[in-house]
Image (cartoon, rainbow, N blue to C red; front, side, top):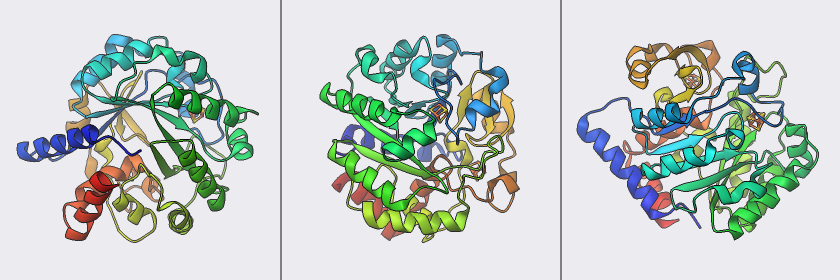
Length: 333
Ligand code: SF4
Ligand code: SF4
């Protein structure tokens, strides 16, 4: 099963509204991080390292919902940290759903199975489970034996209970493309609605040499594509072209604005030069022209989905071939 038509139509209507209004820089996905606390410590996690000093801070429920009201993005990705350990998570999810937003609750799923009944069964809610490989690899990345089994048991329970379930996989330097293919095929067999894949980002807070550079990303994703192109993928086809080196894109760093206990993180989900008090301040007072590949050395290797999926959607409108690809992916798959 792919993404429901109602979600696709809502997103397209939003795009049409923004274009009609002449809004040049608009958000697609609000990345809401109510807490940076987590119940594990993954090797590649920038958040728990970058925000180690403010880990004790949580956003209040009111602050979270005010951020949702401030930022018009049709999709809210509740992430972190591990958002399911945020004390007001059920009310936060319900509040976003009540506002008509599509919510991706991004979780390592370690406690999801026993807490599933907290969440509304609504087409607007998608449980987005983080899995970075098959059992041995995922347990190693998470530094937790049994993590894969717990996550997949939760995934199966969520499917059986009638929730929409997606997965999110980060590809690192040591990831075996054949294993990523095997993981995706296994997940499709479990009935996962869509699988999102992305290369990791070289966070400066992560000292280990585990991230792929641009050329290696393209090589790795060309191999992965051949094994997954017939599956239900959450990434757009134009972003896949970019990952495989068949299309150039500039990032749209403003498309996934991030709100966390410190404020609106600028310029993007991946690098931090400021925390702004308001969403409008982030949009108006970030020197966007200074960021992106070739302009800021920290951006040199970035091909991460939160920087480029919106670029892919916008670029698709510029070529008939890409428009058709996006139409097929949106409505015929
Ligand atoms: S589960 Fe997510 S938030 Fe927690 S340490 Fe791993 S990557 Fe970071
Ligand atoms: S290229 Fe730079 S500014 Fe753009 S999304 Fe990536 S890290 Fe952020």
